[in-house]
Image (cartoon, rainbow, N blue to C red):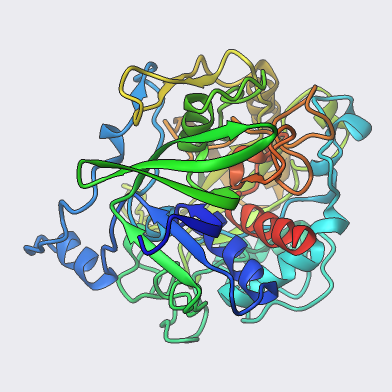
Length: 478
């Protein structure tokens, strides 16, 4: 650490921090000083591939396993994320659908939960910017409004995808994705091998391969191994950031602080700091997902050019959301054979993903070990579970355009690997933690970034939206 005080201190190097910094640096003077504190270390993509192949690499233990850094009080529920430089960009699968305009108006449209303090139209230009930076592959037609074309062409449909798209049009589309359809910006084209957590051909966008130039900027000092545990909060401001490195404690002053870890650790830092907002740490959750297998009568499901090939919106929008959760359909193109002679490919698998609502009984709390948050989670809401039953009631009719023999429903997955909530966005401090610019309602130089800010939990994957929110927040605040 070169100084004791900085214009901006950012905690974390994942999507939220990096996109916030990208916009901030584009507007800041040449004299600003920025400190980025990352508790982990860079684990290069090439070394990750070695580990996946079973080869020795000195990087294998450089970052702790995610299960070792928090206490989970519900062992049936899993919470997935990645430690180290780039955060969960190192383990995400690259799915980048936008939210629907209705997702921001749940109270107004359906009488459910709260409206977000921003609208889809507010975020639309920033969606476009993120899509350009990530070189997203996507279709010409979408169920959500879009002011520009995707940078890369869409992935190819499978046999079943073609039939569903023909029947439902833009309610069934090639999934927008950061898994490149063609080589771009040093990334290769997706190989459709479905091992996306560590892409074997480096086709998926990550912070490491982003070419955004954020951490190479001369104004930015990046400090690895710096584990933040609290802030000094005084007179409506965050004055200092407190962290440990190599067994020693450090305290750095800042004009502006941006917390960009995930929803577990942002909450833990705020709670350790004495943040008394009643919503801080509350409402942790994510979507609920389950697999559906559709057995086909004399139809081979072949083709496609990526892992999640398509998104279906037939159960997403509509008045049913007054009573049951929306559902986003993902068409899975993972290698799978039907174990019946002559019918090996007569099957299609889908992941059905349901939104949820934040609940106060699901929360993050502190522990005697100040670095380690505790997660208390009772389960998805009744609203979400009703959405599952609604899907089962409607799906036979939705698939009536296919030659279906039978539909098999599997148990819910233990996680969707999307940690949401704990610092929800709201118009006032009586309803949430941060305002529409992700600034803490009480501490007006403190940004709390990431999907922890989501007011409600849509079925759409969160990464594109949380990245767009970071651009929006920095653009409107500096």
